[in-house]
Image (cartoon, one colour):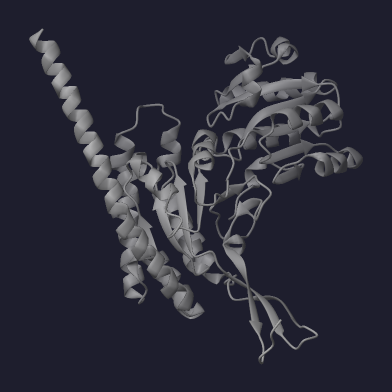
Length: 438
């Protein structure tokens, strides 16, 4: 009885302390948001030369701080369970950091999308009308695991004259703190407010305050799992730009080059299985299935890919070592791991119907030498990116020559596809007159 009472009071104390902690966190956010909002005004006044110089300095500082960033990242990695697929998204190594450095330098070379004249004309009453591109203001970003996103969003926002408020996950807490230290030091060295880039506490309670900060945040962009994105969409009072989870398909048509199809099916699944543009479902035309699956079998086995197969594919792959019978729900899964679903279809129409039913409208590919069927696929598939004879893994801001991206937008308002520098702006009408009244 005494032990039960001790346990009860301990739990009550922890719950109270947690609640009090949440209140402290919530009260501490508003001052940070106010400072970032004020910093956004200074950023919009900064010259293009200063913004470019700041990013060049950031790339150099990141190179100089690789050991410190790796040390912080190892602390986060050590918290993960062995075999957790999240670890790959969380991991930084020297190669990945150098890729971030290259990305920042590439962003610095891109033209600033702000302050461009989109349209101008003189009205019959003499009013001079101009529509110009202006920064969004303060961009809030909520993301999971991947610490490179901290640098990507900071660099893109700075280049376009936007301030940003970053809410990373507790999984990457040490890495994100090390990253923000580097970023804010560079900002101050270049005469910009350090609060132009703000990292919020990793505690989950933070987001609820962020969702209601309509006075200080202009837009929120969630990047991560579908559950995270839907939670933000349903609960935020601040406008949300969705970056969607990917349930991506590769359709191997009957007129496909089998070697090419195998190469694409392997790359789309194996090269980086934990990212949103990796393939989740492989659709195979019945006519080509015997020859294609026979050649795919040893290559997938080499990489220990788990296959969730429909009845026909299961029969043809019955000797495959990592084979499972697919359930209907498996065709709606974003695996984010070395697993995929395989379904055989009777023709292009059946493939299109399956994609319409199960796609999250991220990235979809067809492999075929039939140009007429390829064009029909490219025209009829509703997705942010559609491919003919290429891997879905190319849906990426860096690969598209955009420097980097905030995320891959699968919605149709404001931006679609890699949400990059060019979309971090909105519009303003500037009207000049000489006393006109209506």
